[in-house]
Length: 407
Ligand code: 13P
Image (cartoon, rainbow, N blue to C red; front, side):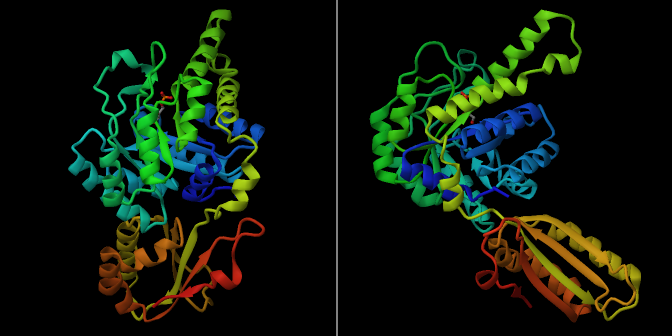
């Protein structure tokens, strides 16, 4: 299960002088194309889902495929929410399987950006999830001509960057140093001196948005100056679009005919980037370096002191509603024993995205209110244990992962 901790993945890239591609995926052809490129080049990879693209696909449905692709991969993978717009979208994306989130409040004032970002960091860190913030403003729209969205570029200020990181505690910072989202006319002028100063003062992995359209030399200098994650979409979309256009020119084709080769086009472009950015060939090093990303099952089995089935059903329904909304909870299962002879008649099985959620869930006000107000008064006879998944040989279990008994 090569889903890995994204903070460790990017720290490895940062300290070893290469960058991991964060490729925005918009359908299954993109997911399979990017993953095939990563497998082919033995590269760590980030599958990225941009909130601005949610109008084009069903986030929940695509996430199911993205997570399956990550779990069956041989190379290390992280799943990231790109340009998250709110605390709610960060919580949702974690519930659906993202193990890294970006909160983008870069269009607001410094003060507002700090407040919004710090709120997301506090929630995400309690779930074990790293956060990318953005300071300065990278204009343009992914997949479109940058000239059509000329919004004003705001370069990241070196002084503000260190204040921002200190005040928000973000793990990675997206910087604005001259790139734009989307296709651009001519060669962009990048402010390497500014980047160098930001890197010297922060010493954390930096992120480049608007990765499409730079030269090999520009990528090299960016990576030498702290860029450890490159966000990339437009060139993949153009490769996919060119393929559909070519199919359409050839003869009259149905939908599957038009889409033929799209995944290969995405793969070729993503593989080119992985080679160019130095992530190719790093997969096994990164796997050895990173904590595997494994969920925890919070298991409770219990008997109740009451006989009223409707009251128990109501308590379970209330629990499913309240507990599923707590950050870091991925799923809430409530059950009634199939065998009448079972020593414990009922169960809760709550899936946490990471062991950090064991504590943050227990202390969360909504959990405390539900447990004290509904559950504990009628379920004195209970056993509660947290189990971490064992899905990969050699993943840490046993002595250092002793199942925790909780009250
Ligand atoms: P491009 O579309 O310019 O590659 O940028 C992608 C991006 O920055 C996504 O966040």
